[in-house]
Length: 40
Image (cartoon, rainbow, N blue to C red):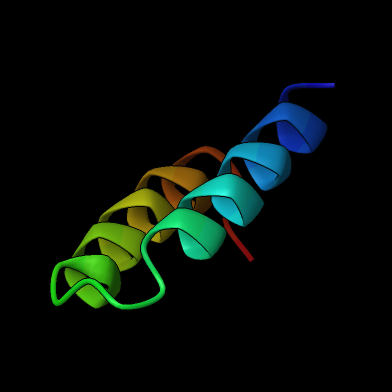
């Protein structure tokens, strides 16, 4: 359930920040948080 919420937030962020220079580092930051909770 947490994962679904996080993925939904990712989708919103990507959609809203498509033309924003901060998009990539911000997504990298969120991905880091996600993988720290769900290691491969």
